[in-house]
Amino acid sequence: MNKPLKHFLISAAVLVSCSQSFAAEPASSESLTALQASAELGQSDAQFELGNMYSTGTGVEIDLEKAFYWFSLAGEQGNTNASYNLGVMYMTGQGAEVDLELSLDWFQRAADLGDLVSQYSLGAMYANGRGVSRDFAVAYKWFSIAAASGDPNAQANLVLFREMLSTEQILAGQEMATQWIEDFSSSEESK
Image (cartoon, helix red, strand yellow):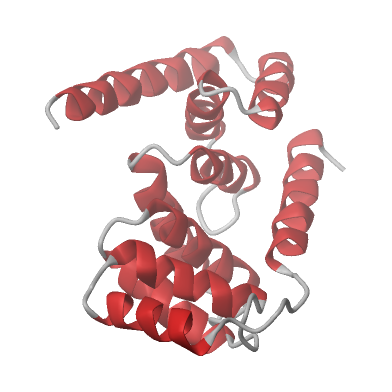
């Protein structure tokens, strides 16, 4: 098994295990009602929190359809955590039909907003040709961006990539990463 594929499989196993949890104490009806009211008023943090509760069974019964619904509303408003979770749901088929194109889209949205785990996930998808044509230069770009934020798995993948990619692929990936970081920094400064 090639090393990028091995790392992707390990990462996918971690994603799946993180998405599974045990039911907790039921939420008080007052707090759940207040959270739902905020979510229905369009507050993306409340929508994400409701989605998270339903996806993990924290205070409520696990209901992946409701989790997907609330994550979708929050993700459409730019909530990076919800966008990442939608990427995972579309990738794994938990709460949504497997759709790697939509998985990629949601990871892309979150990554473009600076979400480290989504950046790593994009790198893994491009490295392994999962839902996209395999493109090591683009994978290198996303691993570089995630590594610059301190992701140890991305840093390890860059070491592997430096051993297996051509100089041209590395330079192309570095150039794309540098451009993305400059664009992201400019957009953050203008906020």
